[in-house]
Length: 245
Image (cartoon, rainbow, N blue to C red; front, side, top):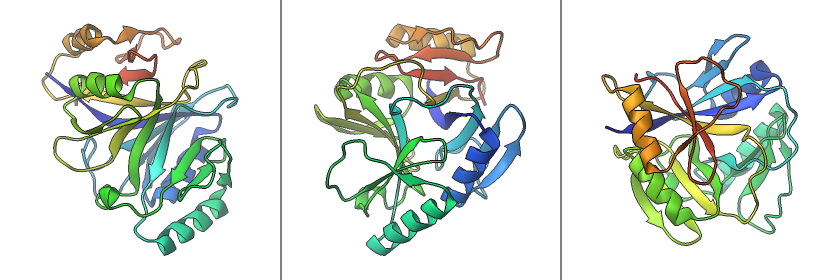
């Protein structure tokens, strides 16, 4: 058995507005916009598809107070594309933020509710990822996170150092999942987390048990009686195991 990363979940005070921002930012479309959630997906892709990690924006009552541990990195194909994308994103409502990044080649922005993301300079490794280059996660131990997530999913480890690790779908398409060393402690629930799905025909309960055996722990975040399972990885990062699909 195995799972795969299928979407990024963002909590927002105005899920419709943040969903529209990300659809416009990525050149994608809003495929569902209800009081409970806003779905953002690329044209021509049937969910779930390893070539695209879609975005699911759900209502969250609390305002953002600390830097997110999970963020998106956006890919560009040239310095001109990077500059144009930054300008376009700011017109959509993004704002520059200083998280201590210093003098770097990428630009750190925040969406209209303050969720940080990066617009990267052109990098060959991200030339075929689509608009999202990577889902980046702060980590105390990137090596350990690579081991856990490569066993939790069917994704392949591409690089591992003490400071950084990266994984990608075994099909060699779509964004990377990356872990960046950080000494910042985790405080409270993450406003952004990743969601996994087992494959069709797999047993949801058995897959949840397998993840627990790898080091995941159960979490009660007030989700109530729902068909998915809320877990945390060994560093406490929340994620959801959705039903097979």
